[in-house]
Structures are given as structure tokens and as C-alpha cells.
Image (cartoon, rainbow, N blue to C red; front, side):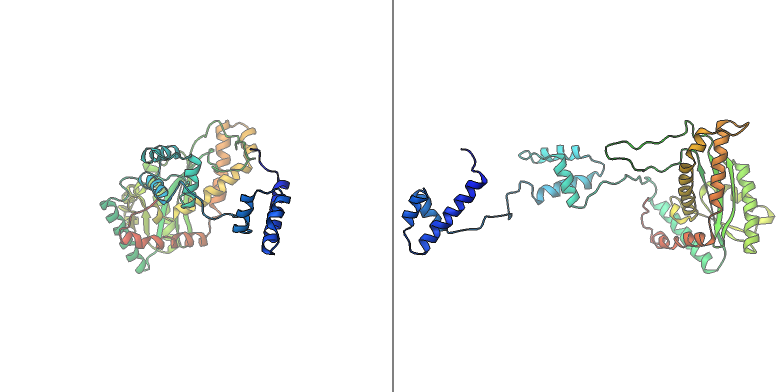
Length: 351
């Protein structure tokens, strides 16, 4: 049976109103029904039911209920790396009478506030009992030195290369976001530095990693600068990579009044120099992007391509190191206090 047009539906509604009005006013509704070509059965029903507003919205039958949503969430809780396809397979095995699309699964997860995020890895030994005890011991010693008002310096190292860049950019919808990159990342630029509440104490930059002898030489220079700036010996906070060099240097008579405090395992949040590197790298990424044409399409006189490009990277890095202020260092060091309580209470760390 063909569907009625909008005009036909409107006419039918007007006929219904006319018929009901005739019945309510005591008129001859049967005669009106004949004139409007309405069957007696339909006329009876219209008069009995009266004029009702069209139903809109309201409850409707849903095949997906709370039990189904809870099952999907349990799949995520059991394995947060599971894909929508994997959830769909598990769902249809558990509820064989239902079929659901991956789009519906994603929608219900969004409504339950489960969103897609970048996956982070927690090292399996990061929160073992021994490491949590070591982090607690570091926190106790740090607070002790702090209460004695002894100057504390923090050391760390990092590296840069020409492939350092932002991982997210913008492009027109439906197109890939691409950019030119150097064919070779070149030599790594290694940066090792030390900060305190007075600001940047000392740093060195070189191509390639710091060997043991170079690290010992750097440590001597750094301790001398720290003594000058703080007018006396300081507490040097190091990670395990630098600790061996520091212990050897402290055996020298010149530095036997210094003290080394080793960071606990898996505790980068307790080293404010990490924040310094993050700030420098953010600026370096921006500078490399703005100087891309100079880096890729020019070459210095009597220099290889790698030497020319590495030289630019060194200059950018040094310029950005000099922008680190004492206020930056004070702010970064104060961030430690947010994590000290968790270390004392042996709370699991998150990365």
C-alpha cells in the first residue's frame, strides 16, 4: 500500500477534527462521516479516542543494556591494549544472540568516559620492594639535607640530533602530514649540566657520548664551579649513570668535603634537570623547524654536510641553554616536593 503524502495526511487530520467536533456538538456525526467518506468503524474509533497529540521521543526498545556495557568495560579493564575488533569478537561469543558493530562499541566506550590514549610502558621492576625502599631512603636523606639548609645541586645529561622534532603537526583533513627530514641524523650532541636554586651552575656540550675520563673531568670542573657559586661545598644529586664518576672524584682531597646523593632507581621525577632538558628540547624543535631550509639546502665552506648541520644544532642548543634562568631552576626544583610524600610512603611510581 503506497504511503500517504503530506497533503493527504493533513486532510485526514482535518477530517478527524471535523468528525469529532460534530459528535461533541450533538450533531449527526454519521452523516458527517458519510460526507467525508470515512467508514463507520474508523469514525467510532476516532470519536472514542478523541484528538491525541502525536507521540514524540520517549522510551523505545534498546537491544544494548547495562549488562552489555559492563561487559565491554570489563574487556578494557582486563586488557587495555585490546582492539575494537577484539572486543567485538569477545562480545559476540559471550552474547551470541546479539551482533554489534565496532562503531557502537566505540560510542558506548566514549559515553562511559573510556577514551583512546597514547600507551605508556611501566618497567616491570620500577615498583619492586627494593626499589621503593631505595627511593624512600633518597627522600629521607634529601629532606635531612634540606632541613640543615645545605645547598643542593642536581646533575643530569641528555642528547640531541637533527631528527628531534615535534610528533604532531596540522594538515588538511584527509591528507597526510609530512615534512622533509635530513637523510642522516648525524652525530648526537651530548649535553651534561648541573643546576641549583642559584640557576645553571655548569654545563658542557660535545659530539658523542661522555666517556668515563671525560665525565670525571667534567665532574671536577662542575664541583669547582659549584663551590664558587655557593661559597662552599654542596650536596650533588646524581643518577646512577654519573654516580661512579662522582665517587672517584670525591676521593680527591680537593673535593672530600662534598657529598654525593644518588637518586633512587626509576625516579626521574625527583631530578629537576629533566624539566630543564624538556624546556630546551621544546625550543630546539621549534628552531630546527624554522631553520629547516638553511639546514637541508645549504652547506658551509670546507665542511661536510654532517659537520655543517651538526654545527648548526650545537649553536641552537647552546643559545637555548643560556635562556635557562634562576627562576626556572627554582620552579623546577620545587616540583620535587610534590613527589617526596609518595616516595616516603612507598607509593608506586607512574611514568
